[in-house]
Length: 168
Image (cartoon, rainbow, N blue to C red; front, side):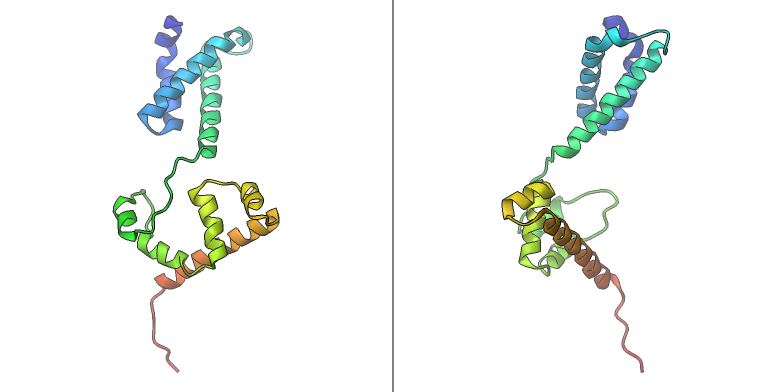
């Protein structure tokens, strides 16, 4: 196994690092990939592919599986009502919306929609879980959340439009 790590460690690291996004997660992913390789080494058939191809494909598949699992494991903290605290800690590249503005606009949505958003975005509940929790039909949950997102976008867009006086 040591020779395998020495030979293919760079390949596995580059694939894991591409999918993981940070060093700690990439290290965990590399370990997971080499463990899977150790357990599945008997599946390698030199007549089908080279060792590099086999290991690269295994690393890619494991990385994609890992990424999908991360999407299901939401690691977020609930939104706070203290807007100044959120504005101070909010920093996502490419996000240009002002956190205070978003919170103000969210308050314009019906309370029921706000509750659905809290279940989904703060607690990480799926639409099905929300339907079970609230007793609503699954289609109703999906429709109300979609409508709420569209309303939120419309409210945000209207705030960005310049206010021009009416000219007759």
